Length: 632
Figure 1: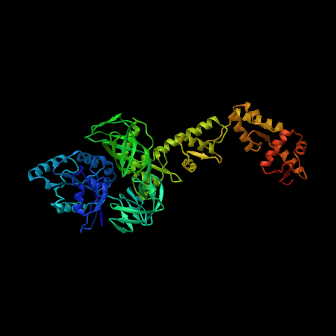
Figure 2 (figure 1 turned 90 degrees about the vertical axis):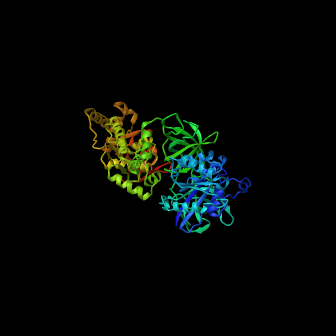
Figure 3 (figure 1 turned 180 degrees about the vertical axis):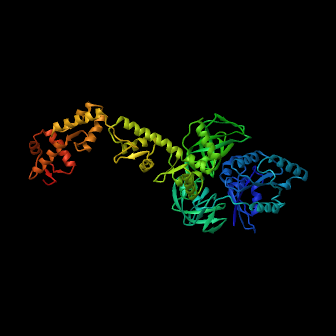
């Protein structure tokens, strides 16, 4: 069966609830306060029975200005609207406000019901119908059916119902893939014997009994224990249905109106969104940069700060790019629509479209930022993916799917196509970057390595960990696997070369000058002359540039001319061999003093040598004496 959600809209006391009762037989005012005051306060829900094969859910919204926030909690997920105008009053303040809201939320189809026709004469009704037609001219309701009805005596209710049925024969634009499941929660309650129940309009995806779900933005995990749609138990619910879901593993206190029940990874929890923002043409308010406003998206309300990215003020009828910085996290996706209301007085002033639900924090009046937002608004999926992979983060396939609002398989196929086209690169651990970003990284990494080569001409390259630390600091990357994958990729494409413990510029070779050769000879002679006596590095650093001397010491050690004791000392190879011979000459355990006397050196040098022998696994210290661990 095709699933359709319709919503009402219109001024308070224009007969929305009574009209729904006439169509469905259900009184959506369930609260005693609503019945006492004769107005709708909270969202009401019904379904219209029919023999045409449609599940038609109806959301009855409050019309009173004091309850606009409740209206906003339910109206965003509808397929089309039944816009109600009372024949005895015509266009009123909330008529205008509701209409602006519908346009900002992207609602683009509907029927106009002129109610309470039993309260006016034919001449008045004819005049009122002309007024209504004129008011909606040029909008999405222009040319849509305008049906005069009376819920009181039943006039034309059957005609209105027939038009609703006719509109239900429409293309289903809601996606039903399970991984996209999202249900903004508009009611939470506890049923005895069942536990926590949430209700909402299932806006995307499919949900089945037994599914693991997440309550966002809290990140609380739960399991679907039971499902009802239109008052009947079912094993599954699909996009376009009013749905009640019984959850296990959570308490009522774990869920709030405005949360989103979702499949894992289906929605982003965020404190910041990039948007295309529009102020209503009818608004007498101007949105200033840094304004504090109420944000409404899905069934959630939150306070946020408006950062206008290309101007200082946004007036009536104007649109611009902005970043909304939220005072509490919300669960939102790219493509979602929203409404903003002034902080004080709380009046509706505008709305718009979410372009990015997980953006970086932007500076104002930056042409590159504005261009990137234009791509997010008007570009192809490939354009947007390339841009996402050009920014500071290194996204993976599932993150791109979420940020673009597409299936993971679609994202993977698009990545594959873009890699083949030479626009994207995938690293070995799954991170994706654009080729333009790779070029920037290549230039920066080459600069780092070249700078190291210049400062350390005798070193075969920069130590790997030092390079990773520099990259971590420069690009705020904390994932060492990602860093290693990036370096490995640059090695594969021969930008840099792996020297074992170090990384060098591709094709780099150590070149000795005459000065280097002279230094090498001087150091060799100095250590050989010292014999068994170790030499502290500080004593030879004065012979030339410290980095050059340090690199030369490493080279001499690699060639076996000297031996490193620790970070502060080297010894000649001959001296090290003397120490080995001394150790193996003892027939039993020996003391420091015995070792010192055997070599004819000082206690200081003997201690340094024995500590190095211990670390090399040649001797073992038991607290008083040492044992040789190698045979003579």
